[in-house]
Image (cartoon, rainbow, N blue to C red; front, top):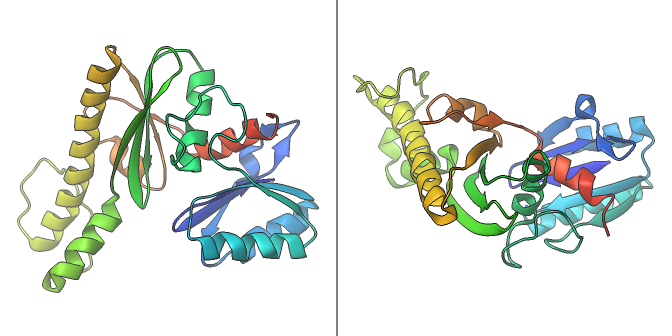
Length: 240
């Protein structure tokens, strides 16, 4: 089993002959991992590889419980196994590094991976397969949460954003559209910067919990692949 413990969510899946079984993918809140433990017991899985970029206490709690259930648990660290794309720097989040592997294996050409979650992370890989680094921005809900913390009078249930290019006529819609505009505009700008850095056109890959919501608001078409980190973990189980 491979497990991705994120800041707010965790995901897991079984492997079949070393490849990810997409039909087995499960999700839960990082703070409520009972569904993961139940999946482990149902599958009779006895080994788990974890990418843990959440709070240390969350990773420790989940890891300890998996071991109590009889699983042999390994925690992967950035760069500690040989994968096709090496990290540009040691402090890179393990999830960001793992998410770069599947796009490169699908075709050796420049690309950008945008993970749209609690944070929006953007990573560039050039045509030689070198990770060139990237950018980090607040995610949609994180940015809104920061705004509401400083301006609590704005905090309210938000309607569907609709067409974000149309000026809103009420505060709730303005907040809904503005949050998406902020994230989409930042991603569009970063993709252009990535192409200047690579000296070439890049393909765009989206992953993360808000990827589907953002995809239609971007300037260019993107490939939406929800399980990039899990695919990278699956590859890591076969690496040394």
